[in-house]
Length: 293
Image 1: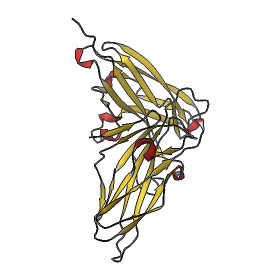
Image 2: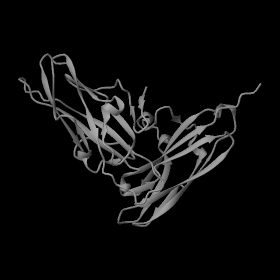
Image 3: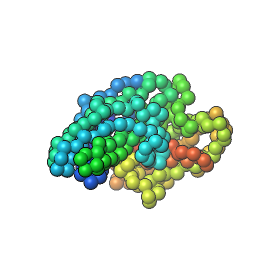
Image 4: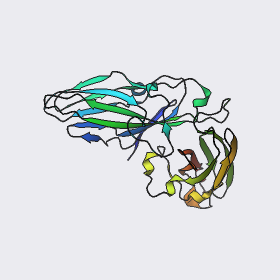
């Protein structure tokens, strides 16, 4: 089960903190994690801010050294649907480029992050690959694993600049707060086609896909919305190159005592006819049921 380390400025959610990537005598934990609400221009010492650092386990009988590096996923690794590659892997770096781990021992790797202080980098969802590569020992064995870090910058509706990426949006997260079961609320998201060709975009709930690993996307303390059909939206939108259009959303929560005091989340995938998809994170909080005598 996911564990979170929330802070006021940055939230880190570990996806299966005890999960490890393994390659023979090498184990690394966590295997994947998400950084939420990253503010462009702010320097983050991830361990100092959140307590998160990579743990490298050497199960071998000899001391090993490991080289640490960061990469764009197209150069090395993979990434989840709805995310783009980090524009520059150098925005994320390790405290040191090499770590030595004694036999049957472990060591730690601290990570730092700083994105440029530019308005266009709000509302972004990126993945960066963290590489751990072993130096060949006497036996000539070189082990390596890749960690995926999902980075979500702060959601902002009043941007003065067009959001970065081939598919931009503002805001990137919609929050329906203090909802009463039986009520309805509206919201909207501006979508930007920053490509040089027109695209048609289909809008669907990523959680309706049985292949989706939900814990990869869910924010800590939220559970999937019981029925994505509660969220009204267009099924398809066409946007000309360099233009934008409004995606209108409506949320209706059925009446019922079971729907009070809930925190639900849905991921609305915005899939172009060609190219990478993006997503709008929809968070719903219903009020607690009033106590009666």
